[in-house]
Image 1: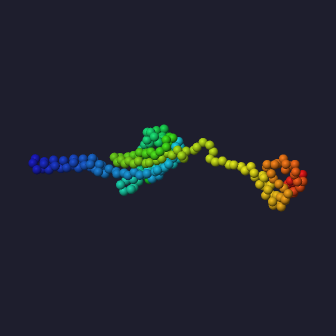
Image 2: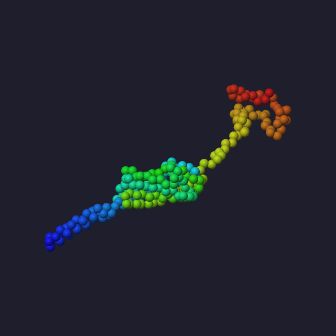
Image 3: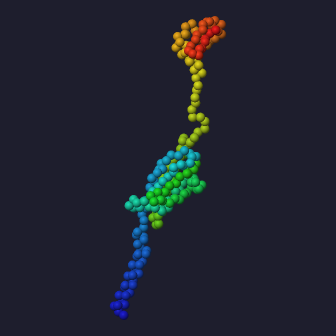
Length: 206
């Protein structure tokens, strides 16, 4: 039971160590390394009190730049100041990456506090984790304002100008006087001249 027994003990210990390394050490060394980046919606300016129609899209990739599908991505809005809520009414939302490694959130209802704010984004895949922050802006000058956006002023002299232009075109201004300050005197001494312009006719005078 000398040397053969010792060799059997050593062989058994070697098998136990190998099995432990394969089941425990190997998965840790082969853990996925992920990267996270914003691909759409970074730095967007929203009107205060509005709802986001496009939102924010991120992409999760591995250390080689290949998309990571099935990663869990959480989006966290600030608790105070310029912020909002997701469609669930909460300040946090969780999405899963698709085959392109992308995850999106949209439909956020913003509050009425203007200013910049940050959305905290965290991606998790197995034991790997990555985080990033996306800066957004709320601007009250972009919000709809009460009242009209312009005025239109009609000309009160358009009829007078049309008559003057027509009279000049017909060459019939001779002997006709216009006076705003002495309208009664002018009507008392009106010239009895009939002018006919175009068809149908316009007659000035008696």
